[in-house]
Length: 327
Length: 281
Image (cartoon, rainbow over all chains, first blue to last red):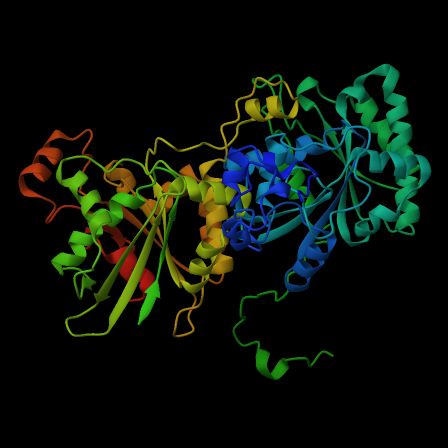
């Protein structure tokens, strides 16, 4: 019986019945008294497939994989939010291109546990299922023919001091952000609680368009409200990432309006303009602003503290005897 | 004792020519390793060596399922401990497929798991080299314009994936130390003196920044980078080199670029060094 419910006689993969097939006789009506037929009973009818073994995948990682990684090293989780077409994917693709071409100023690549996912995103070989994006994060298995929500991992080394920074960057459909704003659907954003920084990616062209501008700004305010609820008022460092810098510089008035909208909810944010890709490469190079974005995302807001301040010895100060005498 | 090491590298990375050249080097017995006994089956290495003797590099293995193993018993010193080295020569196309799909045949996986050393090849100016994506092409891909040519997996991504495979599969050495991987930059004779002085690692940093980054970050594997010239010149472009090989054979030709304790790169005529280091001699 064929698993595909086809006639076994026509199966090109079937072995051991060649004679019956060539004579056009159905396998069901061959003579049972024929000793050759009897000897074939129980023998394999299909060729054994070549066995393959898989290595651990380097496509998107599930929250469990990130948690495991966080148990062994410090990982900076960056929440990336933004409506569809705002430029989230472009930011991730361009960041990868900058690293793979050694053009991210101040940083070098060290490792990525999701290198193939980055490569797939930059090659546009996967896209969200149009109109029906995935509902949940990748958990364990990833199908190679489908783009699944999940984390991208990147370990970078800072040129200035050799510090290694592990970043977990979520690759999520824009519809998730839209639903978070419009219907307060927060269940899929539990991972944000571990985020140190949140990028809200906005389409710079929409902000420069008079008809669309106020709508976008209003939604940013609503998003800040949702985040305030999600974090019970303690929102991590918020960065408004304005894409399409190559189309023009964001006017100061728009930046002021954005900051004012956030201020209504006592939220402050850093505004950064980026150009993941550029139609105006002579004025604004592709990848513009991404180095600054990474630097700002990996720098603590807390004032730098010198763990063990050094001081020059003063002759005759008798430091050893005087140690802690003032306490 | 039986040890196996794995030779990896994409298409046109120099694996086959190295195996063909290293046999005469092992047989000559002048290097760190020498052949303790003449192997039973040396057809593969003789075929490759014949190409070299005729003044040509061996052509690329064209079929993904082409596989020829070379097994040889080596020893570091006469009468010393003998080690059987199995060097599977697996086509670059197969390794490229493995990197793209994240899987290999079960038998190869078993061999990788039982090996505790490897040689990863990358060739200077390889015809099969695929550069990383640029913004123009990526934008076309993302916009689904349909006119973007899919070049395939960039070489540096393939090499990073192969290194990751080694990291997850190689066994520790018998003394409990991490497995060793020699990164072999072949056709190192093509580069100019200025780049030679900087060494193959610096070349990798410039050409394959992702791979170079991984080399500095990898844990659980001991790595060493070598430059390699199997015949000491370019048989295609250098007529003198070709004539000399045809007239006088391969003895004394070829070298490995190694870094000494003071950080200076120099040519060592011992072509067995990348294997000797990987097996731990």
